[in-house]
Image 1 (cartoon, rainbow, N blue to C red):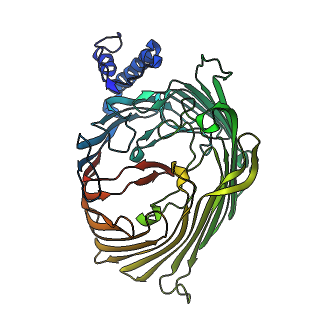
Image 2 (cartoon, helix red, strand yellow):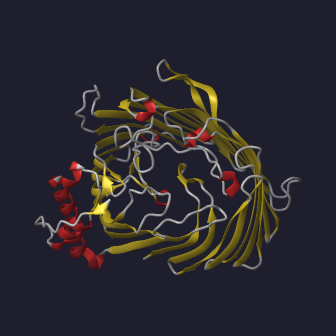
Amino acid sequence: MDPNITGKKYGCCGQVAVLVSETRTRATAPNTYRNNPLKRIFTCLTICIILAAAKSIYAQGNLSGSFETNSIYYLNDNRAGIVAPDDKTASNNYFKLDYRYQKFSAGVQYEAYLPVLQGLPSTLRNSGLVFKYASFRDSNFSVTAGDFYEQLGNGLIFRAYEERAIGLNTSVEGARLGYSFRGLVQLKGFAGRSREFMDRAASNVKGGSLSVDIASAIKLEHTTANAALNIVNRYMGYTGQEPIDPNVQAYSFNIDWAANAFSFQGEYAYKSKDNSVYTNNRNKDGSALLLEIGYNTPGFGTVLTLRRLEYMQFGSTRGITGIGRDLNYLPALTKQHGYSLAVLNPHNTMGNEETGGQLDIQYRLKEGSPLGGKYGTQLSVNASTYYNLRGDVVDGYAFFTPGNTKYYQDINIEIEKRLSAPVLIHLFYANQQFNPMVIGKENGLYKSHVIAGDLRWQLKQERSFRFEWQHLRSRDYQKNWAAGLVEFAASPAFTCFIEDMYNYGDSNIHYYRLGGSYTFSRTRMALQYGRSREGLICAGGVCLYMPAYTGLNLSLTSSF
């Protein structure tokens, strides 16, 4: 995407319209939306509202903002076979301003990719004012013009959100309305175009929801109960010969209930026929079912989650899904581990056909008990597994019956115990199975055992050491791994660390890192140098495959 500097004026806010027009990032491929005069007028009006309102009430309102930059200087690394890109420096930058005055708020976000970090979508290019909004909200009514984030239910049919770590931002440019009737009935609706990297999708998206607070309506005590009906429409024009409907409809119904220690959450979603590559270019409808049952008391809690997906990949562009192009949210419902060897091969959701679930159990042994000891002991057990659906695209799939292909399995246990006032220890074991077909490779299972632990030693009130050790044993793929880390913190201002992941039995390569961070006021600066392996990185359960690199990384975040 190259910047398109037109130098044209549109008679809206003078030089502001010129600035917005000239800094707009364009795709190299033709896109009628970029040349749509209605879009230009809408952008101008939004900016005018922001500036006019901010000018008139600036003295009484609250202005806040943030800046974030993440830059890497890439190096050639003959030992690991890593070749640095031609442009050895890459940088992702974000600048955000928000203004609030009583019931009014407005803001903008400017992004610059100079160029984008390796591995993130290459269509994130150059710079532009990619997010702007003006909003009014009172106790019962809200309206937003410009860009916004939104989620319906659990996101099975729609979620617009941002995850900078993987270059994801699917905000909607348009309008959103919300209304609450006595806090019992909530209505909301929106219409616009989803963001696709530095531009907007060629489709229109419209949606809404109706939710009811059942418990309050019938005056149930010690109980919460809510139900919601959600709908989304994606329209994308089609001029071909095949019988493809330009409209795709998606519906969902979700309910939440909790009484005393018990809780239940469920959502069913249906998507009308959608021609996509993953359905072998067949017009197939899709469905999803999500169930969650929980029980929580002091010292004990458990949650069982089950999910079934059938053709539920839902892209902003027909036939294309993936990072930056998904309208809905299908995260991997597995344990989000903190140990690096436990996330070497995380699960990547198979939205076309998948069934499985996760069981999580938390139990605390009381202080003073024979097993709990003086400070008590925290136990955690987690298990998750996912399979394909039994059946095929021609004859259909079974409802919940798994097929013969296992995608992922993770059975793990954690123990956390304070040995003394300054010493806290954490132990971990996981038995994992990973199928590389979820990242487009051959069908098979990589099996591994991971054992890890860390010890935190609090020297004084503000100083501590953390020692971490890990080992992964496997006969498959890259065989065995060992890892270790030493970290020193003088909180809240300073931390430094050194760590190494060593692959032995296959590549015999060390993936080392050393660095530190310093925080002053509302600004944090971090610097690290090292070698990173290729593989999946995940944020919020959504994963992106990243290449290996060696380099120097500088990140800076600041807010005011």
